[in-house]
Image (tube, rainbow, N blue to C red; front, side):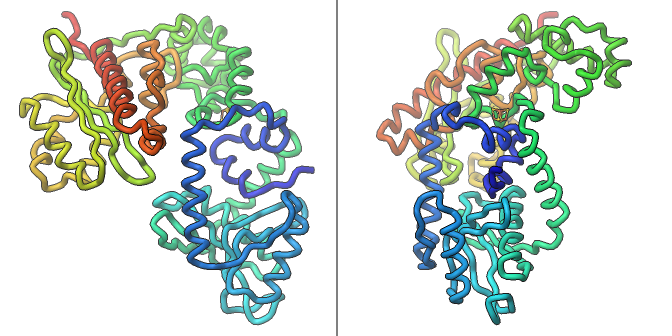
Length: 454
Ligand code: SF4
């Protein structure tokens, strides 16, 4: 029987199928880790190594994967009363946890007049539920070993700050999570893949996508959730083809879904079958013909903008303006320079919440802040009502692939920007990727947000 680990807790929040595959499938079926993913993992490991080095706490040394030996050594280290232990191995029956940190606290336990509490080192700026529950899981294993359940756990975040939290109130959630994980371990075949945002970064994606494509899985239809897929199956609709041909009223009665919702899903299934978006009738709004598009490429870990660029429609060829700020301090002057080259009232289209959030944090009170937000139009919102797309939309990449039949990654992935600048491709890569994203945004604007004919 495979042991349930802290990693399974983390994966469960992304996709139950991921846990089932992690526990049972042949790991050689996983896709290769992309260079930029490895770069991010290494950044996380470096951050962890820095914190551990500052603390100077020892870790148990044991042969690779010999976790029982590791657990025995960790227990001896706890019994000897060390101030802290890094990477201790905690085993309880078929559960295994390796928390980054165990910290000695005042109190009492089976070891004497002290006890330990669990900490984990994370690269995020704020604590997330999956991270908190991982610590709760480790704390439960530790509680068994020291015969004293710790009252608190903590996370060390990207900036080195500590977030401490009470564990007691997490018990019901953790109980449910462990129950679900055990059920998954017993019956892995009962968990089906579901196409979601998590698939792009999942190492099992080749396997799952092949399976879902072969089945014409309903999760490929824009608007279908796991619950809707279940309801559709009750009505005998188990593939995109079936949904595209469904008779709406009888299917609504049999599935319990609203007829209006079914009509929309049927339209989305038809779009999926044809591979073509279905344009929606839009109200006559403001003309966006001359509006420019604005786009950033960022390094979320370093909280930096690496590229900021504009593409402005002109008579013959669109005008491309861009900067690659070399530091946080250079961001605002670069942004002001871009804006200075546009007419002061020209509308600016952008995608999603990233640019307004950056503007609020970095440009507040500056020259560039005056009237800027009033000129912004979020294309993500506008596109939502402009067409029924032939695939689920999770962000700009899907709008480009489903809306323009273009590969959004033809010049690289936006998530690779931080990796690219450390790999000596720097400015060239950023300019090329930034420009191709801007061209996609402009093409989306022209195809879906253009002026409607009377
Ligand atoms: S590829 Fe998607 S469905 Fe498959 S395990 Fe990963 S996240 Fe889940």
